[in-house]
Length: 357
Image (cartoon, rainbow, N blue to C red; front, side, top):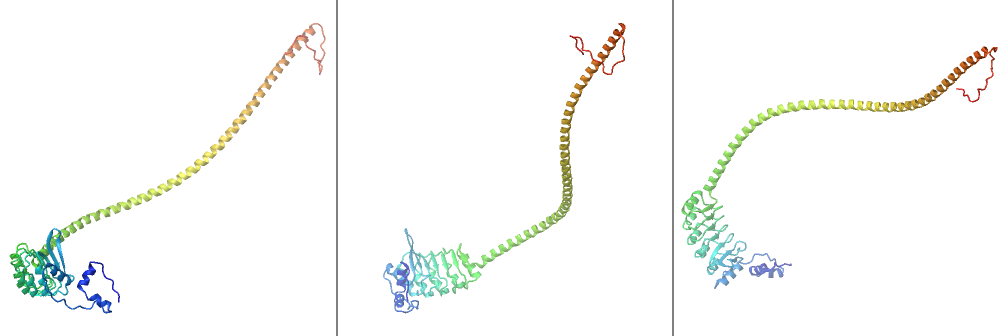
C-alpha cells in the first residue's frame, strides 16, 4: 500500500499527530485505523504546552507580529482532546480566543480555563456543556463572544452569565434557553445581542409583517387605480382601434386610387409614346415635303426663264409682222404688185448693221 505525504509543513504536522499511522501503512496495515487516545503529559513551560497542543491536533497562533496575544483552535483536529489536556492552556499567556467546537470536553474541563482572564472569544458549540459548566466562566470578565450552540444549556445557565458585563454576542441555537431567559439576560447585560433572539425576531417579524401589510394595501390601491386608469385607456383603445380601422380603409381606398392613377398614367405614357412616334413620322414627311418644294421651286425658276424667252420671241414676231405690214404698204405705194403670200416666203436677210430684235 503506497501513500503520498502532503507538502511541508502539513506533512510534519501529520507526522506529529499520527506518528504511528504511516509506520502501520508501510507494514501493510490501514493507516486510517483509530489510534489510541493521547495520554496527558504535563508541560513544564509554554513551548512544551504548544507542542502538546499541536500533537493533539490543535493550533496556537499569534494574533499579529506586534501583538503577542494568542488564538488557540481545536476545531478541526481536536478529536483526542479531553478535559485533562486543557491544563496545557495555563502555561500560555494572553489567550484571547479559544475554539473547543466539536471536542470531547465536559463541564469539568472548563475549570482549567476559568483563570484565563484575557479570554475574549470562546467557542463551546457541539460539546457536552451543561449549565454546570458555565459556573467556571464567571471569572472571565473580558469575555465578549460566547457560542453554546447545540449544547444542553438552559435558562438556569444563562443566569450564571449575568456577571459578564462585556459580553456582546451569545449564540444559543439548539439549546433549551427560552425567550424569557434570554430577555432576562439581555436586561442584565447592556448591549448584548443573542442569536437567536425570539423576542427580537418576533418584533422584526411583526415589523416585516406590518410593512408587508402596508405594502399590500398600497399595492391594492395602486391596482385599483391602475384598473380604473386601464378602464379609461381601454375605452380610448376601442376608439383608437375604430379610428385605426377607418384609417386602414381610407389607406386601402387611396391605395386603390393610386393603382388606378398609375394605370391611367401608364396608358397616357403609352399614348404619349405613340404621339411622339406620329410626330416623328410627320417631321419626316415635312422634311420630304420641304425637299419636294425645293425641287418644285427649281422647276418653277426654269419655267419662268422659258416664259421670258417665249415673251421675247412673241415680241420679236409682233415687231416682224408690223415691219412686214409697213414694208408691204410702202411697196404698194410705189406701184408694186402684191401677190398672194407664199406658204414658205423667203426670208430676206436684214440689212447689214441691223439686228433683229
